[in-house]
Image (cartoon, rainbow, N blue to C red; front, side, top):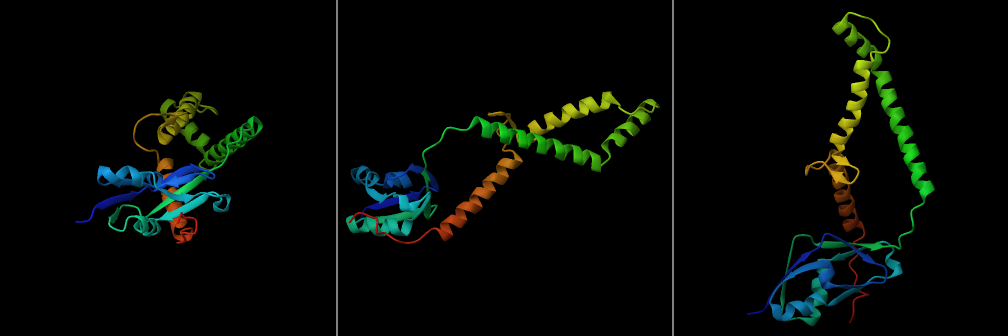
Length: 205
C-alpha cells in the first residue's frame, strides 16, 4: 500500500525577493513522520526579479514536480488549488510630509462631505423646527441640539468602523473590513486566473 501525503495549499503568503521557496512555505502537509520533514524542506521554487511582485504556484505543478522524486507516494490536495506569493520589497521610511499631506486632504474632504450632506438635507432648518416644537421659541442656532448631534456623529463613526486607532471595540468586523475582504477575495481570484501560468522552468531538476 502506497504512502499518502495530504497537501493543503496556503491561500496567500509573503516572501522576500530572491528567496528559495520550500514546500512548507506554500502548503500544510499531513503524512507519516518518516518523510514529512524531507517534504517540508524540499525546494520548490526560486523567486527572481522577473517575478516582480506576484507569483502564483498551482498545485498541479507542485504535484507533478513531487512525483518525479517520490513516484511511490500518492498526493492528495484539499482546499485551495493555488498559492499567491506576494514578493515583499524593501520598505522605505515613511515620509512625514506625505503622511501630513494625506491626513490633511482626508480631513478637508471628509469635512466638506459632511457639510454638503447637511446642507442638502437642510439639517439646520430641521434642528430649528425641532427646537421650536419642543420649546415654542424660534432661534437661529439651537446649540443644545447641535452640540450633542455633532458629538454623536463622531461616536457613531467610531461604532461604525469599530476601531479606536488600532484598538478594536468588539470582535465583529466593521462594514469597511467586510468590503475590503470581499475586494481582496475578488482580487485574489483574478490573480489566480490571470497570473497562473503553468510552467516549471525554475524548478530544480
